[in-house]
Image (cartoon, rainbow, N blue to C red):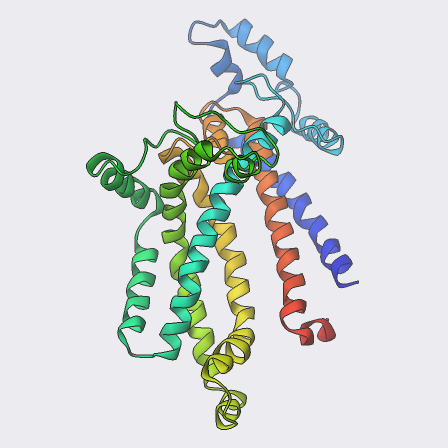
Length: 335
């Protein structure tokens, strides 16, 4: 019942996203008919292209046609590639998902233990390191971090491969099973491709991890400090329970709700930061696809990208709501 109520609130959100996306793509500078007609085109040829694209119709008619296409699962065709937008997004989405999830997992693996240690040993060098990392993560733009890592580890040290996509020129793509190169190469036992894909993935994933370290670390530390000061923690310690049991079983579980909320927000931020990271590392994801379409005044890919991000964000919030009930049963009772 709770899930159905959450889904009912999703519909107005998606309707709003469809309307706003359609209007924004129509007021952006640039005319796709002029772009695809070329610099030597005559006004007559531009008018013919506008008519073939349906851009000569009133906005309400264009919107109704757009909504009708969406209802049939049709995102339209990209004017620059001539391919259906839905198929191109489906082929590029695993690349973006692999990059985003790897960066998020790296950030969690570092930020959560660091936040716990900083809270347990408040005022120590670990606590100060936590503050430094949080400040640096907030201060450094994600594109600057990516360029800095490329300069140091590729240009200066030569430890990293060239930032030119998911695989270098000497590796072959694994069979398309999940779309995740790391997983597909392991499933098929192609360890050379796995090493090549991992080498290409490290720098962009670390760039996203640095970007997301700050909020996760700060929230983990603040939430743990609040829980450690609670009466039930003092009672558990007075009862002679093991220190690790008190911290991990009692304190951290009760501190997880704010951390999970922060993880959801960070994941949504990473979806936006992906656009810059993909351009820096020539990563063939949906972010770079949307940027290229935007530069060419190609409306359909931009609209498909925004709608895909909206659906992912809504699904993420639904998953977080479900996790609340798993972590703390009182949430289910109150709901």
